[in-house]
Length: 373
Image 1 (cartoon, rainbow, N blue to C red):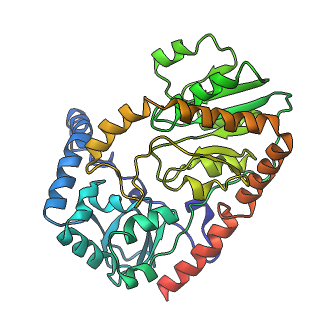
Image 2 (image 1 turned 135 degrees about the vertical axis):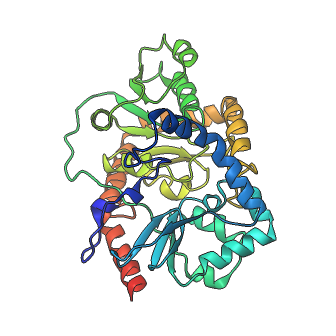
């Protein structure tokens, strides 16, 4: 976003762009205290967030300055002297990912008051699903008018130097292996790999027991976590992205894959169906599980419950679901015309469509100007 500022605006980098408990500037703390604080934060933060929910106090960050005309806040309500706009992935960011906050009338009333504050000029959810996660629970016409979906910008390479090959090469990129559908991808690929000339490259933290389980399949290449330059090289060797995530509010690797001309096979969880146009930029498969309910809320009340339950569920994909995923892979291998069409559309979406820097700049220029005016 900072690298794709609309014409007439300048983004300033500052320490506020990356928040850590104790910054390097605070040298009066011994290194041992810094380390303890950083290690404790993941355990203390959920308790702090739950206390705020109990007190009907949505999360707020303070930002006062005379150096700027406007603040673009990423996922944080601000206490500020400046006009600001705010983007968000899901309404639960305002409650520390505690979904039960939206069952508390006092919390919802307090949140609505903060979101309707005159300093906050615009809410820009990352997707329609994110927008619904808020407006399904806080029904307010003024809040709805203040909310406009803006898909996060992607920097798209203008030219591609793709490697030529005869096989159909699939790629999976995802940090949280089970929750993002890595296990599903391996199981589905295993079903088709003997029938077709194809490969699967896994860029993920794959558990050792899973590596052993699929070690006999030489068409599966498990690379583990990689520097981004290596990831880009793998994209240029690939034809299709597989990303059946059960967890993401917004799968950034989907528009990233488009930027390299890769269509995406995904599932019908949260925002994926609006990021992947079925049979236009990829294929959507009915999932067996999602971390989200039909009303866009998280399926579990607290972040702790979410982490505990989603892992167990994602380790047990159903046979019917794996068959649906493998059928989608087989279809895209067999139908070269479909694969070419999806690839062309994916690249076009990244260069000119809703994930392009051109569309993002146009939308944000209008929003920024209106906020300042």
